[in-house]
Amino acid sequence: MIVVSVASGTSADGLDVGLVDLTAQQDASLDVRVLDTWAEPWPDRLGDRLLAVLPPATTTAAELCALDTALGQAVGAVAAAAVARAPAPPALVVSPGQTVHHEVAGGHCLGTLQVGQPAWVVEATGLPVVSDLRTRDVAAGGHGAPLAAVLDGLWLAGGPGPRAALNLGGIANVSLVAPDGSTLAWDTGPANCLLDVAAARATGGRLHCDVDGEMAARGLVLPGLLETLLSHPHYAAAAPVSTGRETFSAAYLDRVVADAGHPGWDDVVATLVELTATTVADAVRPHAPVEVVASGGGTRNPALMAALARSVGVPLRTSDELGLPAEGKEVVLWALLGFLTWHGVPVTTARPGTRPPRVLGRISPGNESLVLPAPITPPTRLVLHALQEETP
Image 1 (cartoon, rainbow, N blue to C red):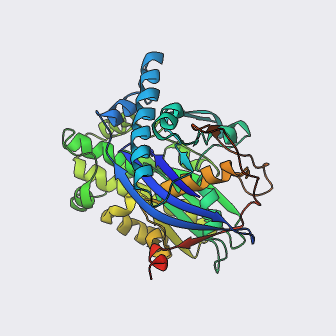
Image 2: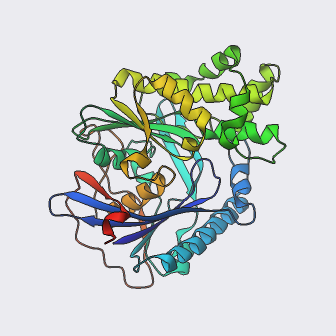
Image 3: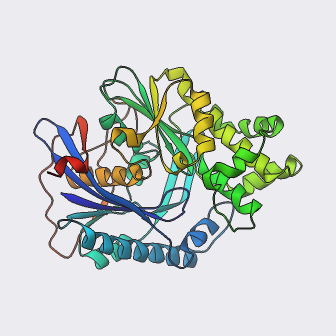
């Protein structure tokens, strides 16, 4: 079945879109063909409105309702365009929504909230929609994040040793995948979220990211500032653990920069790049991976990739080299999770055996009567197929 996937990540810099063809095989493998991935801009400064409600800001039920509606409508319009673009009729849309709060205390996730009402997506496409993919895992004792472990465990199993899948979104997360597919995944700390704030502060809002890592390349790492940043308690928490922009907020960065005497923004950006490289390296080093496979928007930042290559101490490459688009990996993940939900397959973000898996998400019926397929055998491996394999 072809699945349309539309999602916004922690960076909240637009909507990522994917068309993914998934087929369950009798040998418990899952064939995945990434037909297309692309990005769409926010309509009417919706991204700024979403960021404006994040802690420590306060908001109202009226604004949350308006955002829930506006994001649902935006996703619906993008999903409808993706349906028209598909080479064959899609059967399902996956819309995980935008996280506006993720509450973690004492190593436990107490709750998570995503906005983006799926009814608008159903109305725009006529298709069933899988949404709210984090909450069931949280209710079962997990963190609901990072869910990338589900994809990474199927995709990177069977290697010569443990491999680390690194996603560089607003928050950096890592999945350590053993050769047998068992996976430990957690959020290591900020990647792009603080870098984007610094770039916006430096340019008066003209830029929302450090384009091509130019600011970091001009700046110098400030040891005192780096030490202060590394003292954040998140880095001492035992995996698995999650975090978000509630913790690593614009207000947090403003406070740290002010306490440091307002150094130049190029130096702040260079120090933030070193922070991400250091915290990722510290996180993966005890597990001795044979390589790190990176994805996400941060792979476009040469300064960040150079710092990571220097810090992790093992070969670093992007997921593009393994057939998975580095900037489209998350929409492939959401398509996979929606497919598994549709077929009644339970998953877990924990190590196998530590917590019973659950079928994630909720399903909003489309225009036709809802008829779910028979559950499939949980897949044990994922096989990526490049599009050129289909071309004579």
